[in-house]
Length: 197
Image 1: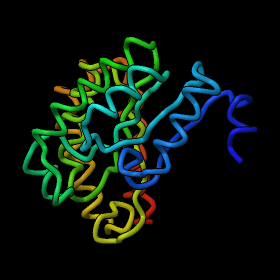
Image 2: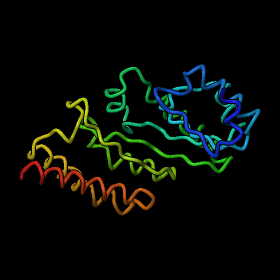
Image 3: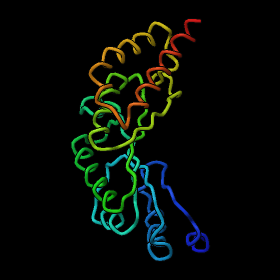
Image 4: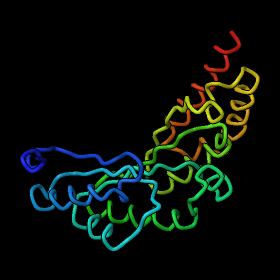
């Protein structure tokens, strides 16, 4: 039934789990190639998959990427994504980004700021900034043992102090992601104030 809709789409996004593991997505991409090859597509991916088939799709279609990425260091990343290989992901990201660059499509990062990775927020933004990636911060509410929002006032203040301690090192180097830093530090400060109140 998609065949009647695909020629009229202005853009398409593929998300949910890892799109490059979904068999049906490949069927849709083949249909897009046949029916609407100029359709901009975005894949929200954790960059764990790499294959000739993915390379062909990324080369053929106007594919952009949103990387679901939790940390820049191996230790933190693999503690959060238990079965993932940090080195493999870091090798795959530039390949996807290069394919997007050939099409002029967007590359950005979705970052879930959590108890487990808030200490790497500045480094994540610096990493993204170096590569020209925008960053979207996702608020985590559940599970609560991951959520900053469920911390008490003293613990939230500790998070804010940690962010502020990194600010002199991080903020001067940010342009593309500067507003992301400022907004998130303010959010954490506001949560701490509200929790105190």
